[in-house]
Image 1 (spheres, rainbow, N blue to C red):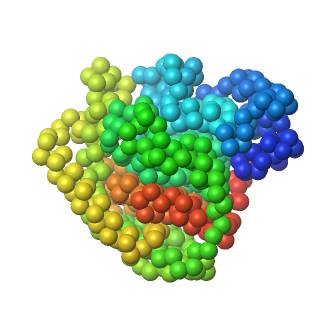
Image 2: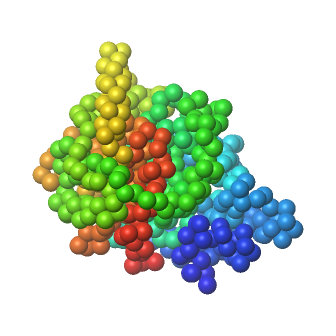
Length: 474
């Protein structure tokens, strides 16, 4: 029975708990047992609090028994285990940011997303591994080591929300949170056959945030199915006065059914987003998914927007962010920082006003172009990553299909070019390589149109069933 509980979706577990067919305690115990059995092989969860989680689960069961528990509308995630990315502050629970500098840091506060998950009834089990300061799409650091891909322990799980993705893929958790600047929700979802949603900036408000008016980085939901992602989004979306860009719409609206008629929707099919190098096997797997959308009634045609300035925009804004958030640590702690983090900070320190101004002007022009493009299309579909999962010993991809990469993040342009558009992007399971490695598909919607993206993702998921394929190790 314990194994069966871990295979249930978050939506199923929440329904059974409310109907008193399952207790919060037995759900928590089942997932803790699975963590104890599998985590040592993959290193997904790095700080665990099983006894505290069980104690909370027992108190939740008592509240249900005495009919004092909050309603399902108030607490839609009641009794569900969850873990938080180790970039996300958790009150009284170690938060290292994947850095030796903060190896013993214990915050005195919860980040806003943690506050909301707790308020929604989710129970924290621990923290998930991340690369140092979230830099790079390969999850390893000097504090906890590397997180391995459960579909092949010799491969990376991606990053930077790699620990969350692996914990979900191993069925150690039904839900986890992540964050995304250049693909950190989407790339590990692609590499681990789960779902990650980079929503419109402000859809899920961010606090604390050193750059509250700079909408490049977002936090968001990760799960094994689109329905579970929507359920989690319903609990973490909605306005907050601490986040000036937060959108007014309440999160509860994302609990509406996802099944819908998609006939006539216009889909821009972008296999290489206008010329990006893509590994042949990824391209073949992606091409095979086009008939699925056509069978759903969508009108699919080859098209892509002009994103030729996206590199300059992203690299400039990213450098600004790194200097802003980490620049004050560089002088004192350089010896404790990995080279790629130092490179990003120093790139920010070298920026001057004209370069920043040019990037911001080009950003404005890009956003205008995207609005015009999405007047013609309802959504765009492209690969999440240009490569399949690569060896765990390799820090980052240095070439794609014979094309050399110029820096440690360039191989993720299929994600970070989308980041600068500010549009919602859902990563969902999209097939497998000949050796059984997952390949993800990315659905990009119009600004603030998370619902259509979820509907499309749900329909594709139900038509293909890729999400049902588990790692053999579980």
